[in-house]
Length: 274
Image (tube, rainbow, N blue to C red; front, side):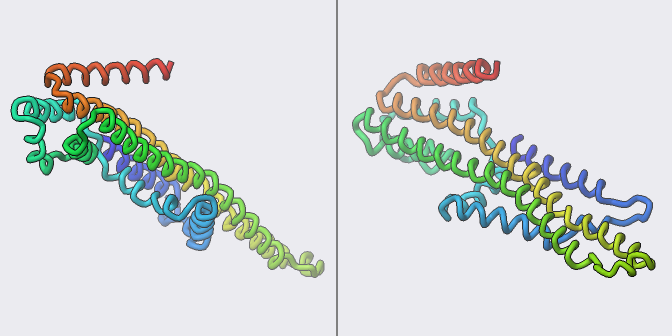
């Protein structure tokens, strides 16, 4: 449901914005909201600031992270536990090497990697250490992507304000007429009209900056945090189960331990929310 929620959020946000930008009296969209120069300034400035702040690889990680928000669906814990139970039963009955023939059928990437390392390492402590290192690496990648989006959410409104200030400067320096006689004769009304129109256009960049920060960057960072916490729990379960399989523990015991692990983490999360 995570993927569906992401799509619904974007669709609902776009529809709400489109309805707000529509002039129902004139039966047309308000063109002032559609300004590609303002959008380019906000997006380009935000991306440029991110490039200055972070290494290139970390900035580029926002693209697969965004795709993950709209394509990744968290796997239910009971489904993962069931698959681990079947693999543990196979390993108990036919030996650990029998698991190798099932690796291609394992959909979860981390579980597949963990099982592959279980076949390589003989020592359980080294196996656990290697899997913990892999887990930490994945977790750091998620945190880095979240951090980039959070900072982009702070850059976007700032570049929106920069665009507004630039628009006001251009407006004031090009529209203000130093001829006082023109102010008296009727040209002042036209100049005032131009000033108000130009001020409206200048404010569009602030609109884009606030919109991108609150509709895209911050929500994507939040969704990545949720998905990362879910994946962290499943990967910790996987490490515990694979190490137990290496020790040839009972499949039923492994299943019970994983169920207790899930309940413990759930209770811990609820206590943190209080």
